[in-house]
Length: 278
Image (cartoon, rainbow, N blue to C red; front, side, top):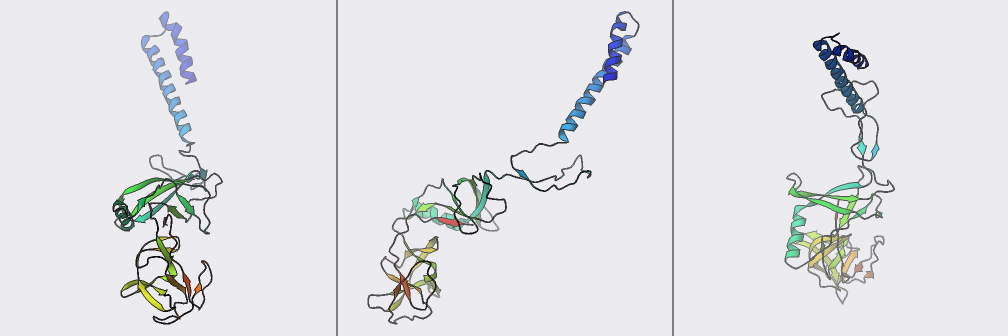
C-alpha cells in the first residue's frame, strides 16, 4: 500500500504537465484503493484470529493446541466458557403434579403461593444461602418423560456452584392450610391402597386407610383418612398386628429405628408445603 501511494503521489503533479497520461494516473489510483482494501481485510482477519468471549465466565481446557489446523468455513470448538455468576439450574416437574396443583387451586382446596423465590438444596443436604428466582416454565410437555422443563437463576458470587452439579430445588407452588402430614415411613401400601397403623385410646392397633397427595419434606400430606390427633405408628411396624394391645412411646423425628412401637401425632399442620424437585 505504501508503494502504491508513493507512485500515486509522484503521478499527481506530472498529470498537470501532461508528463503522464490520464490512464496511467487512474491505474495508480486504482492500485492505491486495491491496496487499502487488502489492508482492511488483513486487519479484519487479524481481529478474527483473537475471538472475544461472547459471555463473561471462566474458560476451561483448550480443545485445540497451537499450530492445529482449523477450518475456515466450518465451526471449530476451541474452548468452553462456563458462566458462573449467575448460574442457571434446569429441572423438571411432572405434568400430572402440575395439573393436580392447578386443579386444587382452582377448586379452592389450596391457595396459590408466591413462587418468586426459589431455594436450592446442595448434594450434602445443606441449604444454599442465596435465593434464586424462577426464570421460565416451558409451555410444552416432554413426550418422553411427561414432565415440564423449568429454569431458575441463582447468584453465585463465591463461585461455590459449578456447572454439572446435582442439586435439589424447592419453590412454593401452592399453600395448604391446616394440613395433616405423617412421616413417610409410617405409610404402608396394600391391595386396598395406602394405610397407616393407629393406636386407639385403649391401646389397640388398627389399620386406617388413607389417601395421600404430595410430600412436605419427608412427610406425606394426608388428604383423607385422618382428622388430626390420632396416634400413628412410625417405628416397630413389623412387630404389631391389628387388634394387638401395645404401649406406644412418643416418636422423635430423626430418632433411630426401634422394635417398640413409637407413634407420631399428625395433628400439627404443614404451614407451607413446598414441592421439591430434582
